[in-house]
Length: 397
Figure 1 (tube, one colour):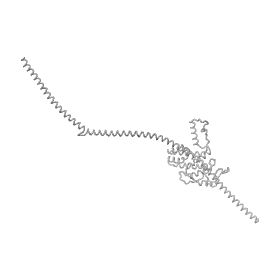
Figure 2: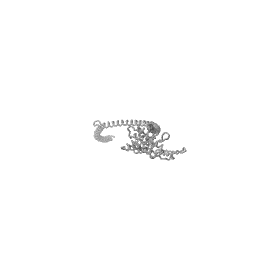
Figure 3: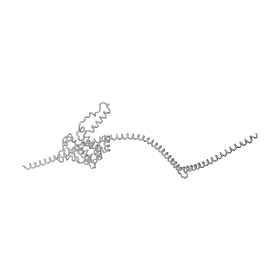
Figure 4: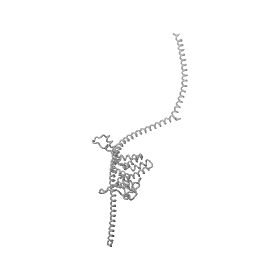
């Protein structure tokens, strides 16, 4: 081969190597762009749900493994697999620094949304079942359920169960929210809850229909859209820490995150309105009852004062009577001037007077007897005188 041929050969080899290098750089750039685009799509729409057969529950430890990961990108082109490195890089900023009861915000990657639910469910079970007693389980479950309530009645039920320290009931309600997300959707028969065509529905039928609607709402999910909504609602409202909220946003996507937070904000606004209405009703009821009770209290207070005044007067009268009785007892029992002493003296005087009177009467009787005898003698002497005079003067005639 000539020198020119050798130079051309070397030149071709150099050109080929340069083209290969440029091709590799172009491929790497495309991979970087594709990965950046995929992470952008994941941040908007979230991870795959993970409800298809063969969807993984964990990220393989092999860095060369390919993970089934179906995500539709721009132009309808779908990504079918990703490597563990992409998910690790995606979840690297998800670790939280806040200290919480359950460490949910970590940088561990998950391949699907349902895998994240299973991971969190395991942590929640460990935390609740590790509590010492029913009151501890109730408090732990309530803290995770508090923001999950979608109606004021449901929130009040949670609070009532916490006040009663019913940890098992609160735990069952919390676990049911996880299980209805993990369970595949079921097609429900909604014909029983459809409103009738005519407006004149019996109130009892309306109540039964609404009860069935509530049962369906609390039951299993009906389709993928409802499943994703319930999943996002469950994860978002487990913990308010910034790290966990960031991880949930990365799992469910910013769009779903914003819709879920907005919906719950609207529910909380309705709860606030209802609480204010109930508060106003209670206030109005309180004011009316307070006015009635105030009048009743005033009347009873006045009656109490009247009765107290009467009792005070009676006590004063009883005190005066007691003093009078004591004075009379003193007057009665005094050994020198008391009534009993006076009575004894009077009795003695009366006895003496009676004795004197008896002696006087005896003397009087004796005097009367002497007087009677003297009168008898005088009467006899008068009779004798009369006889003498009659005899003297009868002969002269």
